Amino acid sequence: MKDKSNYVRVDKLTSIIGGQITKEYYIKDGGVISASTAPGCWGPMITPELYSGHEVTAPVYLEGAMPGDTVAIYIKKIEILSEAATSGTGKTYPERFDGDPSVYAKCPHCNIHNPKTYIEGIGEEAIRCENCGNPIIPQTFENGYTVVYSKEDNLAVAVNKEIAEEIARNTARNKLYKPENSKQHLATILGRADFSDLLVRSYPMIGNIGCSPASAIPASKNAGDYVHTVKKTPLFKQPSLNEINDAHMDISHIGEGCIILSPVLVEGAGIYFGDVHLIQGCGELAGHTLDVSAEVEITVHLLKNVSLEGPVIIPVKSELNPRFQPFSDQEYEIGQKILREYGAELKEKSYPIQVIGSGVSLNEAIDVAVHRASRLTGLSIGEIKNRGTAGGEVGIGRVSGFVYLTLMLPESVLEKIGLLELAKTQYEA
Image 1 (cartoon, rainbow, N blue to C red):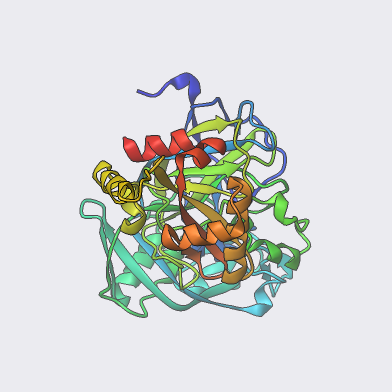
Image 2 (cartoon, rainbow, N blue to C red; image 1 turned 60 degrees about the vertical axis):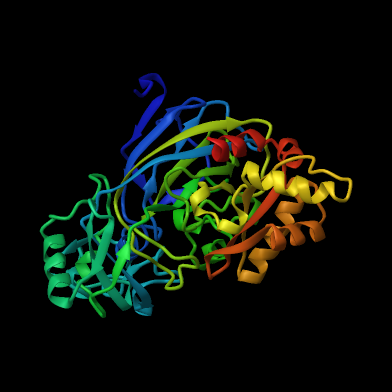
């Protein structure tokens, strides 16, 4: 049963995140936050009124959180609410935006930026300027597909054109679910089915979750591989890398049971989330995946003794590469047996964590992850690289430049950086 005195239901969505946090939504340490999220990328991307490729929850003020602290976010629930979803690789219409199609869309007929729009019909021409009535979608699918989803079976199937267009008509009739306060046009209005009959397993995960950046930016830009594009429009001040905290991760295993440690950059932390994916493979090769509405619930804990440069993830055991899952007692006994033959012993256990890195390329992102891990742990760059090779690996969130570095770290190191109890709780439960 929830403690109603330390529970908040967020019913507002925003496309801009960061800067000073109000106390409209307020929580104390250990509190629970819930919300119905709207689909991420493609819906906002085809909605000129929005200033980002995401609609995320309004930020929540966490009592006592100050810059330099860390918030531990426990994902307790992700329940898919969408009946259908769509995605694809993209192409743009340059005359319908200035600088960035997801941020500064315009009507080329009225020359109005970020105009309100309405739906008439289906397909690319369905989204029309309220002022002049002309189609003004700034970007669309180069190759797109639509799926229908079975919640009971956790499976989805890509449909043919006839079904995709019927889903589009239902979208135009407002028969598909989206949160009440969402401003986006659901991307299923496009009715695309460039291929069909692909069966996919559902593993709901959250693409954008963490604490607010230090200055206001489009919600989708809170990541080192995207933030450099903020300067493409005159709407937002270009933040430095230390003014963002890589909350837009798109890492495939940030689902139920995962713990995310997010750096606090502003008073009150400004905890937010959105961009839930039905499924995503490592790398998000197409640049986008099947975004859905979802009911999400998280629990948050304020860590005063932990200071991070970027997120750290403690995933559920089943989402780790089996090679780098925590060792069993039997395996430790075997390790001790091996060492006894040489007159030595294993002094402590190890547990895996994942350190995030981001940049304008995968090489830069990997370098950032390695250096962040070295500064966090106090271990040398060489030791981090060795541990990340024999006792860990580099995983790709986005091929545009977002990675996670899995490291098996000894108890003494984890205790020094304040993460030992979190790791033990996650892996010994």
